[in-house]
Image 1 (cartoon, one colour):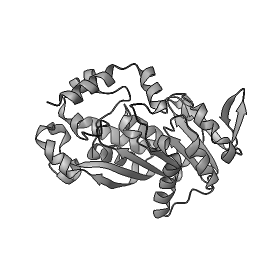
Image 2 (spheres, rainbow, N blue to C red):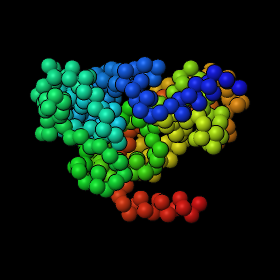
Image 3 (cartoon, rainbow, N blue to C red):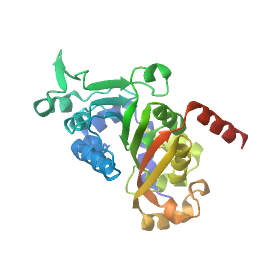
Length: 288
């Protein structure tokens, strides 16, 4: 039993969310993802990955799902040629200090109102709220490209939110999502898979939520919403997986170590199913 892991997980689980966000914003103890630590590297990765599949962001409407309060990736994609960017997040947590740092290089896309840095509406739309709600979806036009990085593993309703994002996809549109399947106590990348759902939910799951979805779970969700889906494994941690394989709960194992040891991956999805097709799929799932 990893007592150090359990102790720190208990602290993280019961830590007030306000304190967790305070620490995250200041990068104390809790570290943010690439879009916060190096947003320009994040936008470069998006552009390069899409370009390798023959997709150009120029003159495209781009939605960044889970932008985390910073405008950096959005304004950089605009500078690279995107026509409009939608910055989407469930919460309104603007990082004014870091957004202010963007004014000198990206002032064309930003403005200052009453001391606050705000996006210019002709270039950037802020979409705050539950993306599953129709009232939220009606606020924006469909996007040609939908992007996220290290967001999907934190979702509490992966099927519902994926379906909502599919509805926001323009005809011919494409999704690119980078997903981190590791326990975010990164020293122990598969430790979270040792515990029952009850123990995880009640005592160990951090306030940022780790849904513990694995590769095949994501395959099922995306293939239920899109005609064309491509998964790319970016990293496997085979040695780390083999060290703890015997203690991982059976529901997290497929019997194929190449699948079970996946740590990082990307998902590209095209051609969302129409509402009628989705309804048929859901009926089939319910009959199982």
